[in-house]
Length: 598
Image 1 (tube, rainbow, N blue to C red):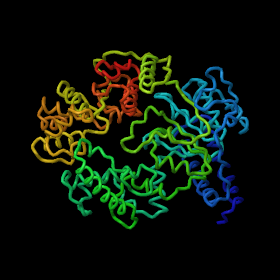
Image 2: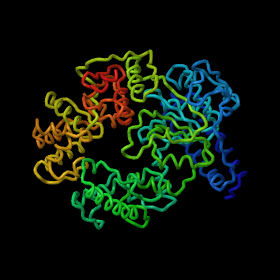
Image 3: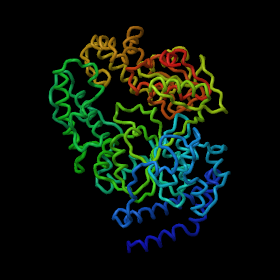
Image 4: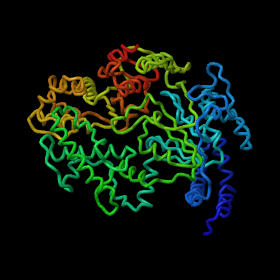
């Protein structure tokens, strides 16, 4: 095939003609109605496949440098045309001189349809903040959008793709598969909805020649120790040292580094180990073992198992080329790790639009770095209007963040929703900080309501494993459960739980004083725990696993850490995430941390 720009243009013209052009108009104008029509869905799928082929052909041109990259733009006041970085132009009388959404649509040869806008935003007109964000998106400059809890981040990105990205090649990077599937139903046909791992999988298992049969959802020390020569350590079993080495590999995979070093040595497995000589010995041997493991993972001829973060790292190290896209939309940007941030910012051509909530950054322990502190953008704006909860929760969240971050932070509640604060007898969800508290609350509920259907976000297997590991340690046998692997005796756990660093184990220790741990594991194993959370009478979850979810009524447990000058910001963010899950009712009568902030 002749691969010159003229032939590509001819193919593109063919692709957008006939039925492709007709269906594109149908989907763009009436997608909510059309998406329910099976025939239209099938035709739209065929149209997307045709568009995908065009993108693949165009990739040849862009990857070979036949189209010039976008020019680097240094953020200056003149770039903003009267706007101010980090500020809503409609606030405080700041003039709005950006190219408006209407102007962008006119430039594309069409009019902005108010009905289309209302359909995109759930029957409401755009807020000033939403309109400004869309206006900035239409300029082509890199942009960060900070959007508070419940502000409709994905809805905004869909509107950007539909209103000001007409005719452009857009890539939407979703945080997880569930969000990606949902976005694929809503976004226009010019937008590819992918997770970053899906992009990596395609290239690593395709172009780089790795065997997809090696990929597994999970590996641990016990599953790989027989494939390795394990150095001996005094404090850890072979399995636990392998688990520690895997943590080091995981830290490396989240970084932008090219090799494993001591900077990747952190791990919850080492929490509670005070002996400096032992700690240094474990870290040294763990790093050596991690390097061996990574050499096997990154060898495409090896049969060593590969997890998702492993092939993602292999992809980022290959300098992937995404320059055939005009715009890349990165959702939940605050949870991006250095590996993704660097890969995106190395792209020369696409406009990058980062959207997220910096105060929902809660995954620092696994390598996420709060992208808003690192990304380089030309423009920035904020969406402070939440559509999930009313002013009572919004005001409370504003007080919490303002106190913790020592600055005025304002979240606006939705005037169409009244969220009540106070005690709830039958909450839809109970959110705790730790797994131990989750177990305690779940067991208490199961004993009182044996026939009720229980939902546990993330399932019960890891919780049962924690209880069984506790039982082993109490009987004098070391366990490989990550929270307890570093301890030689149960007395060591009890002692550590009385320190400020070991508070997360306090509830587990108290559980063992009040209950037989083996019976707890048996009770949890025999409980009526449903697979579909939607079928549950009540849901139990940690704050980490509650992120991205919402319920009508939420009760907060009592294990969140008090907010003061020494509190880690991630603990603040964790409480903020938990308290903003409830739409109609929020019960924090047991949560001392939030009571103090109020």
